[in-house]
Image (tube, rainbow, N blue to C red):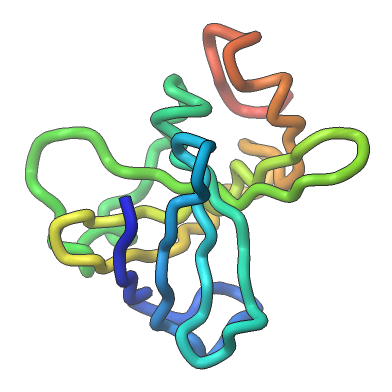
Amino acid sequence: MSAALTFTAPPPGLDPLVDFSLDKIDGADGLYALQANKNASLRLFVLDAAVYLPAYQPAVPSANTEALDLPASGPLTFLVVANPGEGGTTVNLMAPILVNLATGQCTQVILDRGEWPVQAELADYAGQKTDVGPAR
């Protein structure tokens, strides 16, 4: 998947930016670079949760999805911000990006504080746990 994405509101900390490109990283299925169109130096790595965290399906209030004009049925597409580091990769499960692949509209949702970790070790959630759930 490579696409032009438009956020319904600027992602937290990136105001006023709303237009981004989502580009596949060669050789890594489900890993993408999310780059601001007006600031080429601003790039985030995001993972397709369906590939890396298949059980990750947090409850998202309908108020957060209405602007995306999502189909009434079918799964949501979640991207999570990944932070690679020397000790491993962490992912932000508290603030997923919901994407309408048909329109390119997306929104970053901030889930209830404490239910999902901001810095979850990817290795703890990807393939090693069969039931991804809220942080304890």
